[in-house]
Amino acid sequence: MARLLFIFCLLFTTAAQATIYRWVNAQGDVVFSDVPPPNGNAQKLELNHPLNTMQTPQQLSGPQPATGSSGQVAPYRSLAITSPTNNQSVRANNGDITVSLSLSPALRPGDRIRLFMDGAQVYSGTSTQIPLSNVNRGTHMLYAAVETAGGSVAIRSSGISFTLLRHSILFNPQQAAPGTGNTGNTPAPNGISGGVHQAPRAPMMPRAPQFHAPN
Image (cartoon, rainbow, N blue to C red):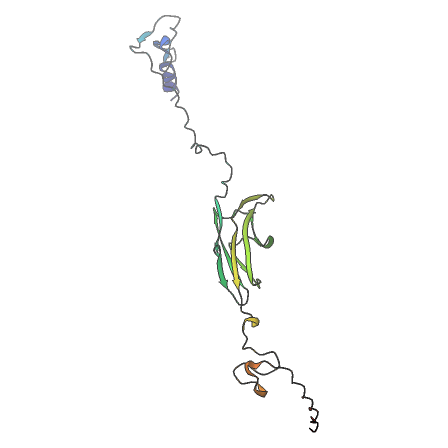
């Protein structure tokens, strides 16, 4: 193996070293060299073709990032309130409603959603389904925002307006005052209709007798 390796090392030389000498030394070993032995008793081998050289192929680089990509996290594209809709009238006698949001892309870890109603914050969390309890009757303004972990506002929705409708005793004249036991379906005492109690009238004063002068 050592001899073969030596032979290959001699063969794979530059084109200028294309002449090889072969001889047998005193130990009986076959020797190949580009330098002839001192006694000149060697076989000269001529290489008809220069040795071909091969360039080392360049290492392929890994996949290149997409054009325009800087390694930063993609920003939020959209945030909107989908329920209630703008100018919608919502019937909820107990005042409980659910505000639904649409956010794209999804909320990133560390960020928070904040919901504001009539200028005041009413929610801070990570859900896009936000329940609100005991909302007052009337018209209200809503908008939402996404706040990053660093405290800056990443995106804010457009504001919407909705009207909450709640049942009220003031709009039911048939409902009696508490403690009267009158529900509006039975006639009120003393001939008073509608279940509304009126104060009793004061007794009329007796009239003075009238005297007529004689003619």
